[in-house]
Length: 332
Image (tube, rainbow, N blue to C red; front, side, top):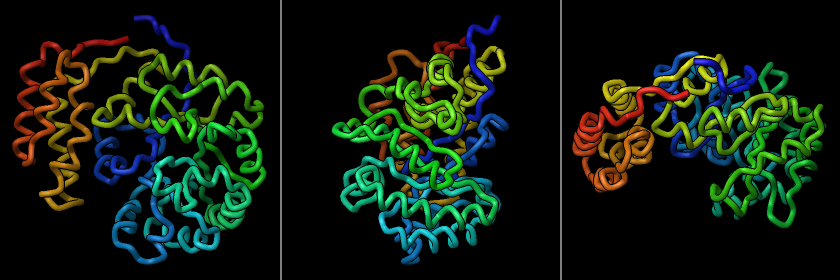
């Protein structure tokens, strides 16, 4: 089949997602689609949590053997140097530090962190200034994640210029405003307004769901793309995109492969949390694992009512086997 897409050979990155990109999901993605993910991010890690020796914050850091970027969030520049030192000490193979200035969650913004930093550029600048020498002294990357801005002040161009002046290596730009959250569509046209010298260090984030959306986002030269929600329960999105870049056909996973992957995912989760918590934590992945099955919404809704892990797995496996012939066998 001829390659219908014109996509440059660009890094594909697993985006940071709270409650999703924990060790279990990162490791699952590494093994399910080996060689297809060029960089991994952790969930966002609280700098205050690290300084206060919060166990949950420490558990969010990568394993000592992982090559992963740690995303930090906070509001006090004085907290960041020590938090970075802790991250490097606990996870010596950390390849970079990412500063979160994009999270739109109300409790994060209310505390002056995440997307609130887009309204407080002096503080954001100071965070970058105190972080840059520490990160680069260790030979690691310093990156920043931002949004288009707030509805009343879409100041992404100002932030990009300021951050690059502070020495960041790349900026992940999500094409939605803070108020949009994850609704509506990411505005990919913002890339056209970024000067070429700066755009070459931009990582695009938002609505990369298939080869067509990847082609649209990469029509201008950029440094990479982050894949987020499209990967939830669907690590094969990275294989699909890599194949499109290389001009190769892509065959979605059959029911048997999906089931093996689900078993591996659950086993990895069992190594990270109590079994009684896994059923609730796993439900967010059900939709992705059943992608491609037509008219599956009612069956998914029943699965989401499950209260026991074994019950959830049994119903999920039955749904996949019963509809095996309805899962698309080939896409472009």
